[in-house]
Length: 253
Ligand SMILES: [Fe+2]
Image 1: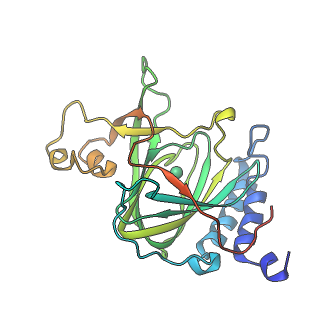
Image 2: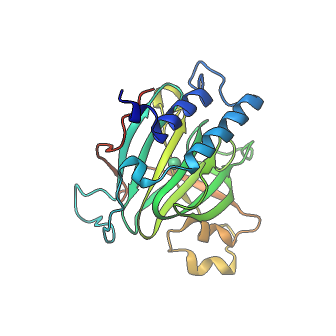
């Protein structure tokens, strides 16, 4: 590997992610202890420095997502690298598009906006689930909602905090670097599930105007406490993810 690629920031991030999440796969016990916390802090520091130009990614000036046009995905993924411990790539969102509410079972995640702005609404699955819960619905709490741009710090999720989220592009197209640890693996109990918010049993007055907005945070905001029922749904028809080659410096892990 040429020296400049060996020393690239994304290569350093990959090295630190490998160190942080070593053994995070099915056979390991990654995610515990002070050493882990220190490594996450170090990884977060490196990730906070990454910019779109470091990955040779240019902001796209696309208009609204042409979701009615087949083969023109609202969201595109650029795969960078993957080990047993983590996966890393870039998501590009067209203007007006969203990655619907979904989970990351037993996983950690770190997300850094490269260009544009995204709104992220994070939910915690309640533990334990209410007695008698059938499994098709999930009791959850709206944990956080916020907007992130390229000047924002990385956004984190963990197995028990902000593990479910919806990500929406705000005011035009957006892109973010995404690290997941361990990677999704349906054969190891880490499949991606999609959810929709069920209306509260007793609707609060403030929810009426946001019922149709599609914004899960707005829909949950009138509920007090912010406990919600989430219904597992198939992948929504208006969401799918295309693939494109990653154009940035080569990464080896
Ligand atoms: Fe996600």
